Length: 231
Image 1 (cartoon, helix red, strand yellow):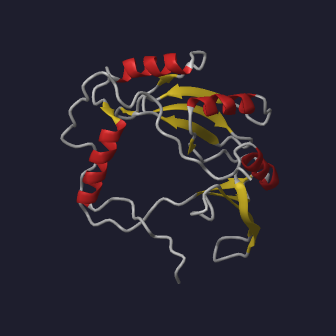
Image 2 (cartoon, rainbow, N blue to C red):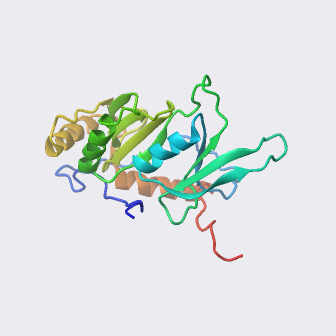
Image 3 (cartoon, rainbow, N blue to C red):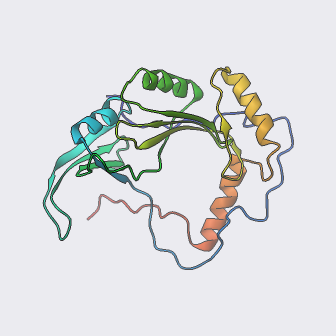
């Protein structure tokens, strides 16, 4: 019903009219080659004050489908709780896990939940949806060079980022105010001008290729093929 997560191309001019900057000696800051476990990022969990209300926000506004729900029995020191499992990826039964048990006076421990979005047009569309929803409490508009992002606070003060990936790479952290009053062409041109002046600037495709080579050499590439339908 339109809830499958789609992947878009990075935003910006992928074939610029300037020479690609030379690759740095390395792209990763942490270079220890210690043996790493075979792991891969799977999902994030959040405790909710009002589980049904928070579930409604993530399904109605962000389009997640409920893939499972129910009460988990107590296990060890963990009390029994109600859980809701959310996903938009058929390869992951859950991408976001919500459970009850957060006290109303307890602040959120979520710094940010970052979600990719396919295009600047889709980002503008989501801005209109979010600003019309009185459950959304705050906003931060940021261009990181690597991405065009809107941060917002969900109904329980968990910060969520919607990010359009750009074709450029600049070392993090980096950022300035994202000006969505500019049309797409002007916004892309302004951002390209800024990122080219930042030390360490690369085309994202070059950074990705270099980072992959280094991760493989260090034995730290995220494990692939960990989920299997075969028992």
